[in-house]
Length: 280
Image (cartoon, rainbow, N blue to C red; front, side, top):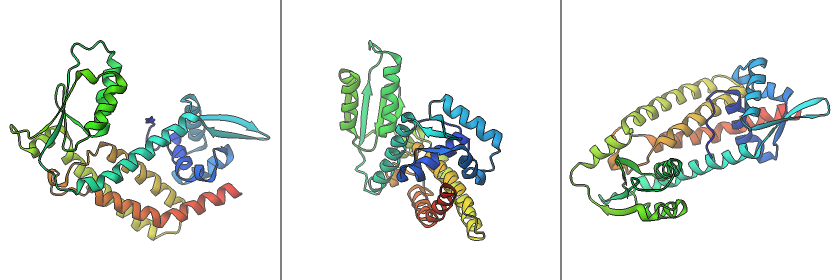
């Protein structure tokens, strides 16, 4: 389950803090007075924090409850389930980096899907096509999906689950009417993604220079949130195609690995910052 929350919102930031730092400590609720301190590096006013928490409660992500003199905000099961999606996307991205670097055999895996005579709801069909995109297929034309990788086993399982098996045809072969590079550029926004990765890397190093010139642990937390969440958004759109099918300036895996290396270096500082607040 992917929760779409506004980037840089109080809800988004607090979910990040729980997901990355607090759950591993067994912490699922935090008093309001400490939430104010945790969010100080993000320059959120007390009013905006209260409003953001209220929206989080309305979305079913937090529950507010009184414990003695303090008001606590506790994660709900819905919020915790969303973290599983986050973990799956990151794990998939890391595992497919190896796949990208293998030589491509030139064959496309093609899914032909006939939805015209289906007695299925629009939501079922949308669920299927949306899942195809997540697996790694792109829409070449209406009812025709392709991938340079063989994910047909995943497609068959998905079709069986949704009762669509009889409407599918799975084919493997060469598409001779168009060059592979043309097919890629028509289906996936690889040139736009290449620019996003390049801009991301530039801004990341500017931030690292800033972090190295100061000793504010709160800034480290801000860095991890901003660049961690932005990278997550990018890799969700990254089809992770074979390297030979990508633009010559493609730096996706290198940029991602660069962030993870920096993350490991600065993570202890962010953990110390949170520990100081939680132990007060």
